[in-house]
Length: 88
Image (cartoon, rainbow, N blue to C red; front, side, top):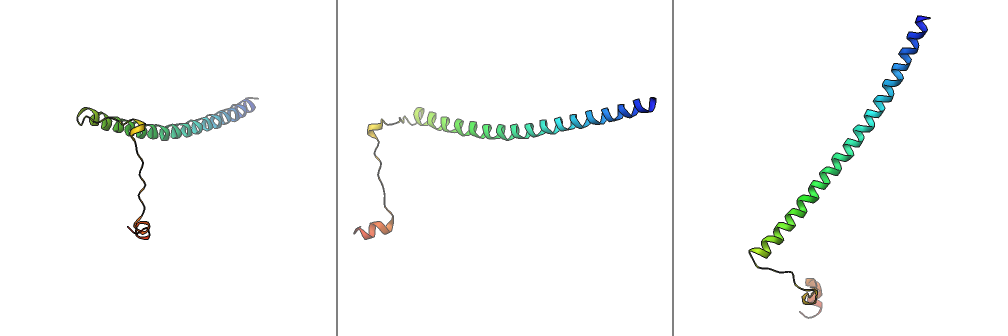
């Protein structure tokens, strides 16, 4: 009788250990995904900070302003081959 109880205890312990190991592996995978996302967010933040810093310096030190949409002109520049064929 004691042998059967011990055997059941061992089986139960092994089953619990397997379940806990699987839960641990799932949590490790979640940690890896979160680490990747954290790195991506840090890179994005540093990019945004750099852009803001450049814009602040341009405004404060160089007295630059963003032009109004009506003041912006887009000019297309052709390649050298296009210019030659057009007589330029």
